Image (tube, chains in turn red, orange):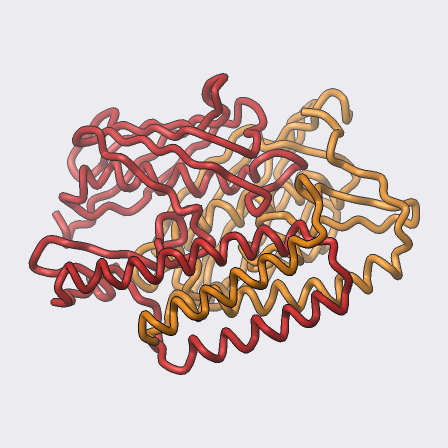
Length: 209
Length: 209
């Protein structure tokens, strides 16, 4: 573990936000394209034609690109951006993206709508997707409103019943702390209550203490 | 839980495989488009132009589509397809997709390359992504070569160190069984060994026993 990849980038916040206003909608449209690809019943010839168009778009975007990943960036104005993150990244079409509300230090919640792309058992959210979203909201909660960096130590998930695709609610809070260890409790669920409950131990690395 | 969504579909295997030969490459190209979107540095005007093209492709695919999700389908020839699955779905660009090899009943492994779209901490696989992939390979392992249906009961993940983006190896095996409960041990890691270890209890539902 190191701070490598947490990049101080003095792009002014206004410029960063202008980029977010173009990149965010592109990723949102890509999420639609993922969904349409899963659910389409158009013929094979049309599928191949669409693929050709997708490849042309890949070429256009790759004309100018970073060699590696974008990482996590921040400027001296106190603005941070994390567009590539698999769960909350504005520019990552894999991410729903999860919009996390930090209600108070050590307490967070999120509302999310999961569609066809997140399916595991028929009609249900993939158990691994629930684990992924819980891990993220718990990590951000452990980081206590981004005042420190934490890594997942252990994560224990208890699956109470199937999680239906559609609108879902997540919540997380710090249960207790001891030295560099932070215990977090969390759940994901629907209007009828939690479907998956989680307990995690998060570690504040010695170099970040 | 019910069998709703596990659909008997008497499409001949040859026809299913013809569809796989068009849908699989489209999803593969979409994965490239996701990666290019995360890493591109082309200007905002070009980003907006590409978005317009993506929206046009969404319209083309949605001309003819399923209302719901594709679910899991199987025919009497013994062929099953699960194109929408979030971890192994051939047609789901969120899925790497994980190619799982069932070496023996109750023992499986997979090799996977995770790129920018799976990032959490800079340069590292998102801890939630590791959890997601482990949950899936463990579930398939518990299902014992698809001879039964299982649901995740509990899952405990121990994060040993950061999981680097790049080539990774997963393995899983049944540790023991008791009634309708199946204990599975698994890990994900790189050439230096496991980065995340997992223990899961999977449940064979009473209706599927």
